[in-house]
Amino acid sequence: MAIDSHPIGLLLVLACVSASIGGLILARRRLHREDLEGVKDVASYLFAVAGTLYAVILGLVVVDAMAKFYDARLAVEEESNALSDILLIASQLPGDGPRRIRELADAYVRAVIEDEWPKMAAGGPSPEARRLAVDLVRETYAFEPRDDRESQLFAAAAQAATQFWNGRRTRLLLAVESGLPALVWVVLIVGGTITVVFTYFFKIDRFGLQVAMTAMLSTLIALNLYLILMFASPFSGTTRVGPGGFELSRFILKEVPAK
Image (cartoon, rainbow, N blue to C red; front, side):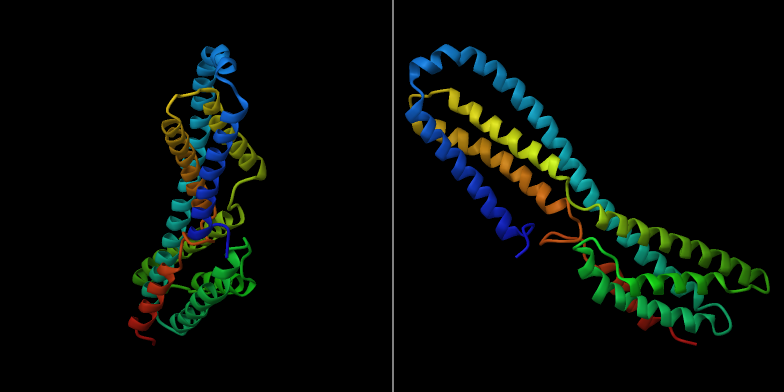
């Protein structure tokens, strides 16, 4: 099971909360009230600074991860929409070009869904899908218009082919750059740990209340890390961008009559 799946993510959240409560219990046994009273004022100030700084960093990383996810979804939509446009426009062109474009598009959709999508989870493209994409663009550009109507159709098909290629390039780039650098994860985990540990320097008479507050803080931090884990890799894990747009292109292939 992949680490960026819902069961593993929820287990990590529970583990973080359990570890924070266990640390609080250990701190209660080791730190005496007299020791904590002497550092209470300084600890309050430092906790506010550390908590604010960590919240800003964590929020920026969450926003960046979710933006990358929605950029990947948009790239897939643009690529599949452009492919559908090529099919619809090519069906109005004369000669053998539309039949060849249709064959290439059908093979490309099949290669993307069955071969390339699983490989994108590891950041790699499909050589077969790349070859078919190049052939499809070349075949679209190869048409030679003979009148004004065909010139207009060719211009629209060429624009759709350009959008198709750009969408594919963006999708693969986002797949290659998925995830976060190890240094960012180190900063997030160490920063979250320090933020939670700061709560151990305050001693409340009702121990249950302090456990509840520490658990809520660690849950909030762990849930944000869970969001990053789910969204930072758009094409892998339980929450991922799927090839739904290309499934619609398959439907259009069935609807557009072959010449």
